Amino acid sequence: MGVGRRVTRRNFLGLTAKAAAAGVAARATVLEPAWLRAQTSAPVAPSDRVRFIAIGTGTRGCDLLEASQHIPGAECVAICDLYEARHQAGQEALGRSVPATGHYQELLDRKDVDAVLIAVPDHQHRRIVADARAAGKDVYCEKPMSHTVEDGFAMIAAAEKGNRILQIGSQRVSSILYLKAREIVSAGKLGQLTLVDASWGRNSASGAWVYPIPPGASEANIDWKTFLEDAPTRPFDPVRFFRWRCFDDYGEGLAVPVHRDTFEVRSICHVAANCSVVAEVSIPAICSSTCSPACRSSRA
Ligand SMILES: NC(=O)c1ccc[n+]([C@@H]2O[C@H](COP(=O)([O-])OP(=O)(O)OC[C@H]3O[C@@H](n4cnc5c(N)ncnc54)[C@H](O)[C@@H]3O)[C@@H](O)[C@H]2O)c1
Image (cartoon, rainbow, N blue to C red; front, top):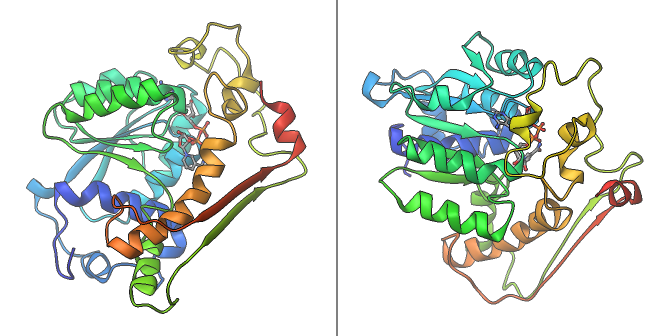
């Protein structure tokens, strides 16, 4: 995208990923694309405005909603979450009140919605992506793309139907920091790359993913039944709901969210060498990830 290019529906989702990935810090950094900065105050034609909904307004969904406020022409028109308190969290992240529901299908049925941001636990990605695509919406879904390999193929099949965008968001590969890294490597500033050594540590006293459970969270304000769709039936368990990454039914363990991040570092080289994230180059890589004993022992 060159400087001066206007924001259109087609490039909105990519922009969202980049802004979200770079976060608040990016707003003022030299890495922010000039063409995006230049049009922050530029009016966006009604036909180019993107009206979107957010499904899942937990940690990541709120990050995305905050970031969306810096995308010209982006307009969140409704949010959805299974935990009532997260409706307020989403509205606070957005900085204004929008309709909130626990039933995303109601929002997908709206004809005035162009796009959908999906930031729900991994085991729900396949179904919600498929439903959003069936409703004819452009989709941005958080990484990791799928909970299982089969889910991944089903999502690709859903993506291939119709002429809408499906983007899987990944903090690093979507980040403008990567573009900068590509620039540095492509310019030969690092010389010839012969080895990439990447590591990622998640050691902490409490263990990764052992998030606090809000007092008052109960089956009265959490739609536990819907959370369990595409997962084994169990009695209500707030530990599973709030620390879902620690359980194989909903997350994928260390290998996917953390070790995958180290592979992303390696993919800088792919991007750098080929100016394309899809092309591969053969550079030996050592990737390792660590997590604390508390994290390992909490997985079930
Ligand atoms: N937190 C991060 O830093 C981060 C980074 C990258 C990617 N991600 C990805 O983003 C996604 C969300 O992660 P998170 O950390 O925000 O989790 P979270 O537990 O903080 O939030 C998930 C939210 O989704 C809601 N939800 C679950 N099923 C739903 C449904 N069917 N309809 C509507 N809402 C539903 C839950 O109530 C919860 O509020 C995951 O796929 C995760 O891997 C998170």
